[in-house]
Length: 613
Image (tube, one colour):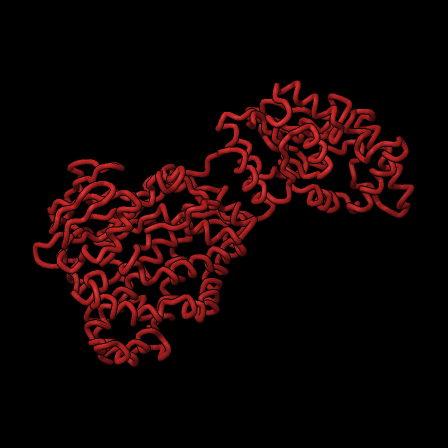
């Protein structure tokens, strides 16, 4: 069992050594090749490895720097070394060098888990103040074993023996993380576990094989989770169904177990349609048109869903990805030289223009007419039903006008024209009202729902800089990280629509009687600890990737591909254009909390330059 974890300094807790050599070149004009040859020349004259004379404290910094200057003058007579402070090498070498943020984070996380943490480094006595200040880990490190204080260094086995005596950990109780193969080989011969550092992502994955540590918790973000609109009558647990009172005043069985919720969502014996009637069990303050997919069951639902899904398949969304990227860049590049700005309005503009392009709607009309109507429908106060119904009616009528040709449609290749032209391919053909029902979901979901999901994903990543840094280092992590955040993210104040059980249903949590109202809580199911280890943690490397945030079964979200591809594309571009973007924590974040959606009203950011980061 691992007791002590040892981190190398140079190339692990610090940036890669080659990167520091290149920075030193820009400071002094001495190239990495020239400097390394001079270092080797000094060491060869003493029959020692390249940095042993100074790392074993055989030479002082002044003596070593002076010998280095002589070697450079001998090897490169025309080289100008006047900018190089070789006799005070460490101060200039470490100036403006930042620690490896990800490894420093990992060091701290492992310390929280109760492991002993050590730094095992080949270093220089005169440089100690500089490098320890750079990584700022003195209060976390239990041991710092530095070659210059023991007159031996890695990969000498004696150095590892010294570390064992200091830590009280022997052999396989030690884990070394080092970027030098010879050091890892020597440690492994002492029966130590070793990880040869190639990248931060690779090390995190390998450390997880030996040790547990925490990723950021979604619960640490103030106001991120919604306040449920239901009232708890009896609490649900893993062995018992709960009872809640939903907005309509009906009591419903509260299903929270992941497997049980998934079973309800796929059950043909739990129907949506009976809830959308006067006096029906609902989480909405008003009825919605029967033609909406969320109100349909069985063959009626299947007929319309199959017709519409062709337009939201991965291939069709990829067809507009080049347009998607052009739109994203157009809005983001406006902020290229701006240091402080609110990212949310840019996300709003991006999402609405992409959806206008996909649907074939004139952008100005979308912004001037459909945007305010759809925003009210999704963000209205549930207590002001008259205003909500008025705006929903206007939205419905406007979309019907487009279908009937009373309002012009900009793009003939857009989804609206496609559906109108191909309505006869459904059996029976789709009516105007049915097409309107589908388009209501596309106008509302493709804009407001995607914007909400996008803004919350971006906000999480900026709130936890370690997640932003991980994506910056390896953009291949973006899909899994988005998936993990979506697992923990609810778009609004409810995580499902209630259903009516047409037969008795037996679940792990208990039995639901026939004709009962059922509330399959996808939000809580996605935090089921029996399925997701440490369920509140945002773990980009989580093995269990299936979640219920987009629904499951027949009523799974039609726009999932659009949302995921759009958010992936946008994150790729943000990370490229603003690699050092940071949340401006000096500004308080206000949240919208409407009848459907819950999201931040703003995302204030600071666009640091590379020098400022």
